[in-house]
Amino acid sequence: MSEEQTTNGANGAAPAQPAGAQFSVEKIYVKDVSFESPKSPAIFNEQAQPQLNMNLNQSVQRVGDNAYEVVLGITLTCTTGEDNANTVYVAEVKQAGVFGLAGFDGNTLDALLGTQCPNVLYPYARQLIGDLIQAGGFPPFLLQPINFDALYAEGLRQRAQQGGEQPTTDQVGNA
Image 1 (cartoon, rainbow, N blue to C red):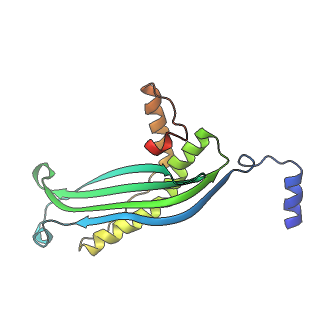
Image 2: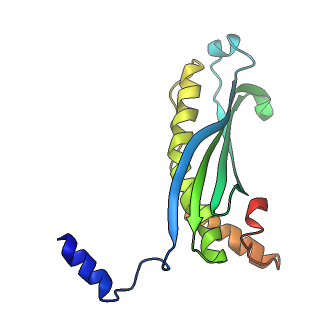
């Protein structure tokens, strides 16, 4: 069977990616983590309806010729009370990874850094947020899946509306 695969490649079948293009996950790690529950233990006796607010951000930094650090930041804030003035808890995670990307054009590189890398990191951040909340004495909470492809497409649309150009590999670190 491996002989067939070699033969198919030799017949000039169109590769799924540009020749020599490589995407690899070099390292996954927690860059920063924080959990605060400023009104504990009194907050455990409150019966108010909690409100959740999630803030999602991403940063990219080139760390080598073909290596990029992508940091996916998630902050989940739970509040109660009038105007959500009482903070129940704040869970913040910065899940990071170093990704090897070589042989891609600028637009493809930008798309991979903006979609595939956060897709790899999100399950780790999601699990850590859930564990932090539960360890803080609150009911288990699982973040819903996020469509990073749609978020990236929306970001491109907004940049186009503002008359900005699509980022090149040099601009990726400022995204």
